[in-house]
Amino acid sequence: MNPGSVLEVRSVTVRFGGLTALDAVSLAVPPRHVMGVIGPNGAGKTTLLNLVSGFQLPNAKPVTSVDVAPIAPKTQLEASIA
Figure 1 (spheres, rainbow, N blue to C red):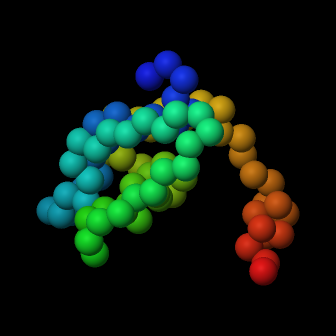
Figure 2 (cartoon, helix red, strand yellow):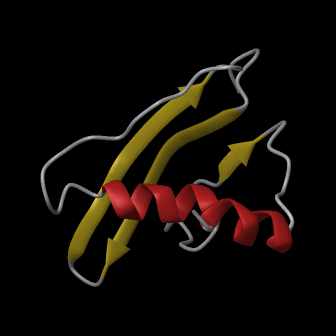
């Protein structure tokens, strides 16, 4: 893990049958930074976010996260109401 990273993904791969959605993807998010994920349709953006949030498991290599506080369901619900 990179020193000071609050979230790190190293060489993760996700496959759905014969389709490779993510192929050896890596990223590190430093503290107090906002990052975006951009790309064309089918590039794996949603798969990456599902992987980081725990909804999708990688086919290899785990996702490492540090200093990411879980958000209570009530807080999530309140944040989604505009």
